[in-house]
Image (cartoon, rainbow, N blue to C red; front, side, top):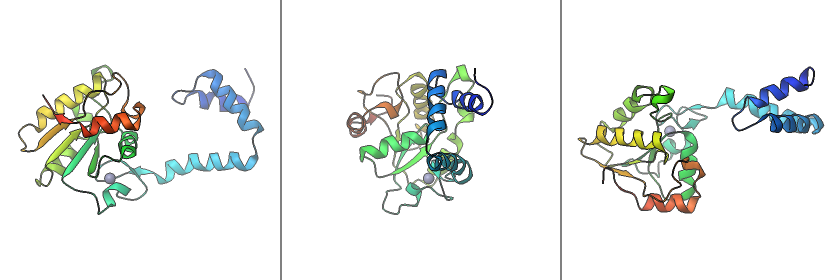
Length: 199
Ligand SMILES: [Zn+2]
């Protein structure tokens, strides 16, 4: 369509999730007309996210140090774990202010269609963290969709004999969606009303 740099930018933007060709074009022309300082700040933010952000070595949330902010917080309890699919789910649950325990980020959900099985998720690492017996409850907060349900079912079977309470979020979340799309009141309510898995 266009030549040179502007087309390159449209192509790159068009590869981003949720950005269609029209949005890519709109953003590219916005960048073209924007203040050079703003554009520099955007470019720097893009670069910094790859250079500075890494995954927490304990829970696999995003972090800027070896441990994430939540794992470093001494005021949180070590006795309750909340298992989620992605770091963005940690943010969604933190927003509800219902949870003061620790997280474990699986890195996805079981999805035969995409070739993701239990071995691709950080389940072994979860088992390692549960081994010392400190944890008394594991909350399975996977997405309310087919993959999330399959993952929670797999995990609850896996955790069954470990002498801890395994719970799932109460129903009421928008079915088929991502945890992050639930508003914080609904998610908070689902969290507070969690029930034993398999019931
Ligand atoms: Zn962490």
